[in-house]
Length: 210
Picture 1 (cartoon, rainbow, N blue to C red):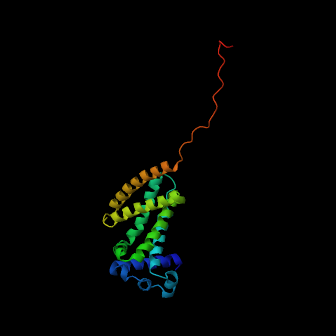
Picture 2: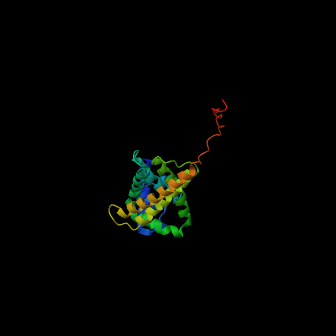
Picture 3: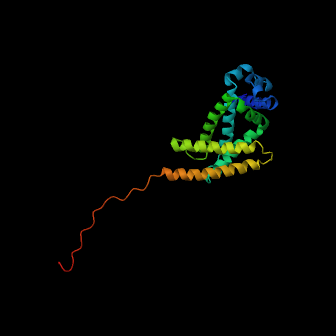
């Protein structure tokens, strides 16, 4: 089993345990035992429980970016990428919901996930060919995180097979983000400079003084 398959197996087992026991009942060792994986290798690849969250985020990003569209409006590209990321969450739905319920009482996991989510959003922006660099890129990253969280709030209660409520929430949030992005571009553009000074042309000689 290569490293990628090993990680997927352990992460899947961890979220399976979370669905049964809650996130507080998850440990790397317990997940390794559930997936029948060697503990020494699990220790090497997942030195702490938080590594499960970090690896899960990377796996979700990879799935979202693997078939990222290269044409079309940026908004449509982002929508497609974000929904692909939700597809990964949906595969582990009960475990992810258990994690979300635990975050208010687990500040360490919440802080770790917040930082990882910002890094993920930067990657998703770049995947849609939108710059995440510089001060405006950081604003876009935070804006996309707000879009993602709007989708997550809808996804938690979305029991439809096609995630229609999640898609609708993403669509609304992206529309709001588009309006903000337009405002940022207007503020970003420097004001037009006045034309350089040119002396007036010499007066034409009048017929009287000629």
